[in-house]
Amino acid sequence: MTLYGVGLGPGDPALVTVRGREVVAGATIVFTPGDIAERLVEPYADHIERLTFPMTDDQAVLEAAWEEAAARVAEVAREDDVAFATVGDPRIYATFGHLDGALADYPAVEVRTVPGVSVVTAFTTALDVKIDEGSLTVREAAAGIPPNHPEQLLLLKVTDVADAHEQLTAAGYTATYGRRLFMDDATVTTDPDALSDSDYFTVAYAERADGGRSP
Ligand SMILES: C[S@@+](CC[C@H](N)C(=O)[O-])C[C@H]1O[C@@H](n2cnc3c(N)ncnc32)[C@H](O)[C@@H]1O
Image (tube, rainbow, N blue to C red; front, side, top):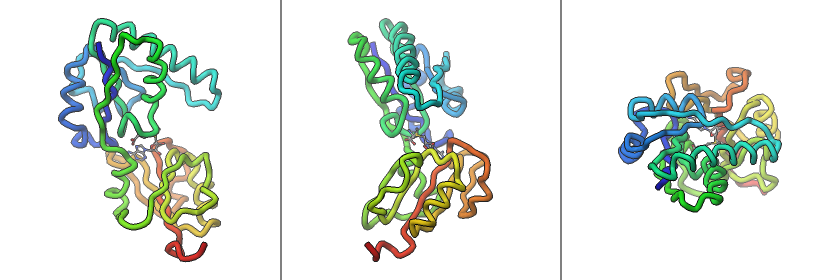
């Protein structure tokens, strides 16, 4: 049978797609990676089960977690349709990609995805940004600022806003930060001190202060 990777959008229940709701409602078990996804599927899912993915850079620990998750999903998906529901889009910087990879060991399980509204596009609405000329570079904050200093930059996983702000300012960017966008407690600010605590659900959007005129 099939594992559906379902994107739930950035956090507002109204931004879960109709197709996403239908697939979640039809799944025997809806697996989730965390609280936010769980809250979003609760109204539609019959049975929810949390899969745990450790926050670590240790590749061996991560691979073991993906393999364990794949084994559990495959156990159910052998007979039934199941879903893995995740914030945003399941193909964009998402754990689902790793789960999909680990499921290669279980060829009886077909894998499909249902796209969701990604923070990579939705941040524009929340931060009142237009992307129309030039190019937007998307990157994880831990990878640092690209040496070619692109005109427009979106950093994901900004857990240390003060550090990101220091790096962005030194590189000639003006930055806006968005935390828990499209959720009840969303914050949008240019003041790094307003976000001094660490929260995984934080992005930084930065534009070169010179508008890209200098090399
Ligand atoms: C692993 S990526 C997942 C992206 C997701 N699959 C998507 O398409 O939106 C997680 C990062 O996305 C960003 N993110 C996702 N949703 C967000 C939201 N609602 N508000 C702010 N940042 C968000 C944060 O930077 C977070 O660390």
